[in-house]
Image (cartoon, rainbow, N blue to C red; front, top):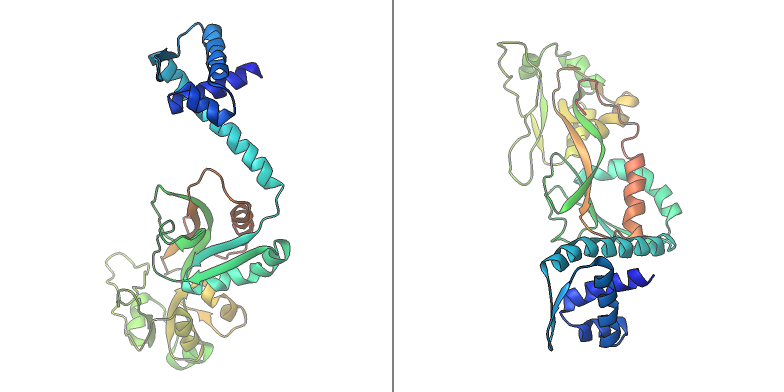
Length: 305
């Protein structure tokens, strides 16, 4: 314990540049701090400080010693804080940002989360824009694609893919396309990106030398669910993400077409600010959604994820 107390006295003195200032922080006299540091120097056989009547300054060995000791004390403080937090019930408000259609995969698991952690308040922001997690003060965000940001930590949630679908009624009227170029003769329900105004491309697997089909835009929507609803009502073929069409495929309102020709796959990530001490409310949210979201996701074998 004497050596540990001497280490604390040494680090505080190195940071304050004064036995008096460090003694004030530790509730000790300047003399007691000086003696504690002197005992450490005697044990090490090295002079850690150059002293004068006003202040002290690290020697080169003292600087090297400080650079090793400071992280050790930080780790100890983190361990103590973690232990304290682990004894506290997770509580407080969590601000989470998700894609606009993210409620499809989040809402089914939220009742269990609320039951487990009733003192956590969830503030959910559904937004397709790329938000700045730190500047916009979000606790965490769920997004797809690559998110290179050194300020963030990330956890892989699960994959998604796009599918071509149409209603049985539409296919009975218009026929079933057999190859990508057949889409040129069909009604296509297209999605328009709200932020850019561009139509979404349909990533399709083509035979060598085959040109991409010129896709009609029989109906354009800037809402993915509206596009899927249009397809369910027989208005054409839609190219949509698997978690938006999954229920309609399961109950027969939609059927897949050109299965295996779709080539667009992606990955959802949970991202949060890099921080030394994570609040219990955020830790339990990360662990919970990391274990449950997309656990049963059905993605074709072609996916690289």
